[in-house]
Length: 347
Ligand code: NAD
Ligand code: TYD
Image 1: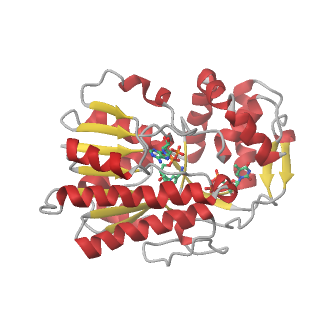
Image 2: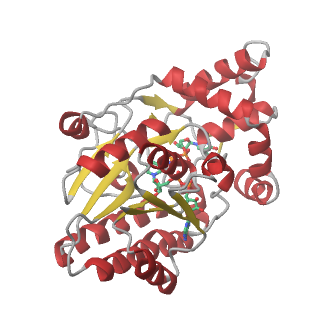
């Protein structure tokens, strides 16, 4: 089986590629990634010599190249993760999000359809999406698979749009698909623009921790390897044209999460208790900031038997250890363009 994984050099993609390459030696895994600022082949160094793994440096917005690759490799199944993924960047440059997340997804759908339209048997288009398409919750309630889409940021609007196109290709062209909408991931290899790795990096460097607004925003956090395991299950056992929500059963207000992170960092860095907390700085809020995300993951739990394996305190501790043990990785990704981004976003 030839499997195309897009965005495999990014945060979640690299964990999915590793799981598939190691667990399924009979599958040929093709990782297609154009290596934006968020893509990093260092994330997959351990797989360089694997015989069932090939890296393809191409861009999903380039329809001609994508069509040619499908002609050459006839990918049976695709796990599509490539995306622009950061809300703050989508506020500054929404068009880039439409290009990659909407047009890029359409290019893949078209190439997949053309390649297999005479026989879709044993073929699959697996689209990886986010809970952010559902918009924002109040104090109570959970997102289920039937919650109406109500995206508030250019990022979530572009992901919602791509989800709709995948469904529409299922309805219109009979294309076999599955979609999963997952909550906030954390863990090793996450680019330090997202909350947890950004704050770990800032604590290491004794820099302010910029908490948006009053810090009372809530997210549902899931360790990235648990997400990869859920993807493995849905890929093999998910029903055609179904959506599954994936979440951590693990809601945290940002400020409480940051305080826990500060505590763990003080201990691991051997600094006096309370020193990281002093770095907390409340800054201007993100426009259109979603108040609360929380996933009802009972469908994937009941139907496929998936549940998160790690408690948050444990996952967070493992994550911090990874960043402290991989300072060269951190330094490499925070050189150059990262400094420009940081200045623009936080000054
Ligand atoms: P990421 O930003 O870390 O990685 C994205 C990857 O896609 C990078 O390797 C990048 O080089 C590649 N890419 C971007 N544009 C491309 C293009 N035009 N052509 C080819 N490759 C391109 O993102 P992530 O956090 O790993 O997220 C992966 C997927 O999971 C995304 O679709 C995202 O919407 C979804 N998701 C993420 C989260 C989360 O918490 N990070 C939660 C739910 C869903
Ligand atoms: P983020 O990691 O960007 O994920 P998302 O916006 O996709 O949920 O942000 C998680 C939460 O942390 C969100 O409520 C915004 C907040 N946040 C801050 O308070 N400060 C920051 O510097 C960042 C990047 C995020």
